[in-house]
Length: 124
Image 1 (cartoon, rainbow, N blue to C red):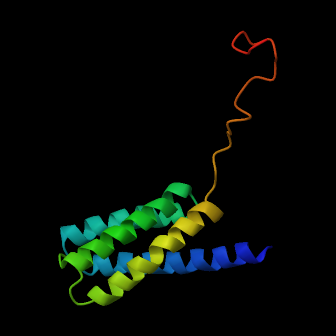
Image 2 (tube, rainbow, N blue to C red):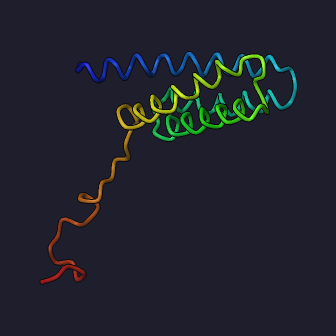
C-alpha cells in the first residue's frame, strides 16, 4: 500500500471518530434540534464509512456549516473555539479524502460510446 493511501486511511479513521463524537454531542442537546443534527451527521458518517464521494463532500460542507454557526454565535457557545478549529481542519481533509478514497462512478467519458465505427453520428 502506498504512503498516500496509508495517510488517507488514517485521516479517514480520524474523520469517522470526529463525526461519531459529533453525533454524541448533538444527541446530548436533548431536544428535537439536536436529534435532527445527529441524524444529518449520522447520514454523513455512513457515507464516509462507505467511502462514498458524496459523504466526503457533505462532511466538508457540514464542517463549514458548523464553523459558521460557531463563528456567528448561533450555536456551540461553550465549545466555540474547538468547533471552529475542527471545522477549519476538517474541510481540507474531507476534500482530500473525496479525491483520494472516494469511489468514482464506473462510467467514464471515453468508455461511454459504442465500440462500432458504423455509428451514424460519427464523422466519416
